[in-house]
Length: 400
Image 1 (cartoon, rainbow, N blue to C red):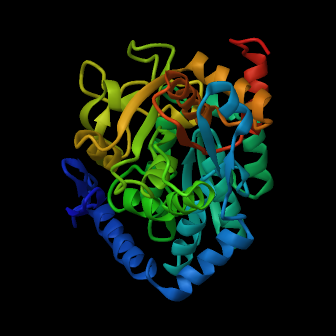
Image 2 (tube, rainbow, N blue to C red; image 1 turned 90 degrees about the vertical axis):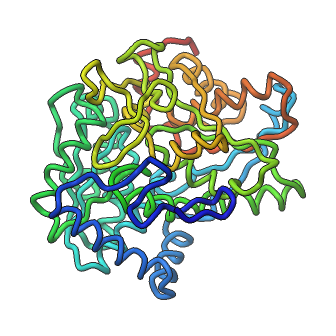
């Protein structure tokens, strides 16, 4: 493993310490190693980066701003800054890696993107990237999430994506990943698996991290420009961990900055009631990589739950597992009610409706602000809440 203080890259085999790797059959291993070689070539290619940077700036709308939330700051006695990934085209951070993955697929001569999605934000972003790159697109989504996130499903279909409903198991994100991987095995020669988070077999966590690190680079420079100093802490929600690793990478080597990843406690600590893989998981293998994994009594991946569809995955990215192990990042919990309360709080106080995923980070930031521990903080608003409005209103746990 290559390291510069805390800015860790995986080993040649794709491990961050004991986490990560490539637990797949030999046929896929050969293809994944080809993707790894192509990624290493193209990520430093000036023409590739010029094309990607053009799209990020003029199509996706980067850089996303850092906004000083003055009303929240006054209310909670702490200067609260928000990294506004919700303002990106398609409404979340997912467009960052989706454009990168689609461009890499095109350079490799692929004709289709295969993807999974939970909340639908990755699905919308991949469908968007496929459209702009002229690629076919199959998106696997659990039946429960299709019903819950109908606005995003409609967007994907308008963009030309083929939506495949997954009806087994809990009918949510884990099963969508299972189905997408199964389909990819039969189409890997012509298709790219465009994974939706910093998870999966090597080199996918590394690829997602690379394309999402734009968040942290921007945020660090923007915060210093506005305040003349670094934030005392940075906060992001974490399911698989793509928005979080993107933000964290800008600050890992700044040892004066505390870093928090916020997991979904859901309905509580009992098995099946949460998706807090880092807190309640044990070392295990899922979808071709080793991570902290929620497991049943037989050691199989357990059912995961969160009010936020994009967080209900039983595993977590391998670099996050390693950062937790070495103590550089603290991972903590927010439950459904706290997240929904923060959803309304940010909406009413700042006029920003966050995604339920992002609401977990907001809720944790407000907890820290009330504690008086920090004078300032930076929270990643990873996505906007348009997709969640009807669900929240129809399933109100907290009144408006």
